[in-house]
Image 1: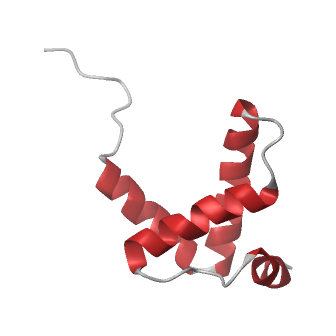
Image 2: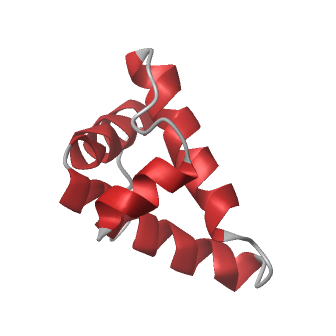
Length: 79
């Protein structure tokens, strides 16, 4: 049996790691920048708001509440 060189985390562990990072403002911002960069490789026209909403909804699905009320509240706290 051949092993993969870089095994991927199971989805649940991957999601847990992302949510843990999103808990702090700094972690959410760094993850936002990473996700934006990845998303723009696929679709250069994707907006900041679309990436933010995907992340905020991901947080909602796992925790039952949004991390930020809206994009505007995120950008105020990002500074």
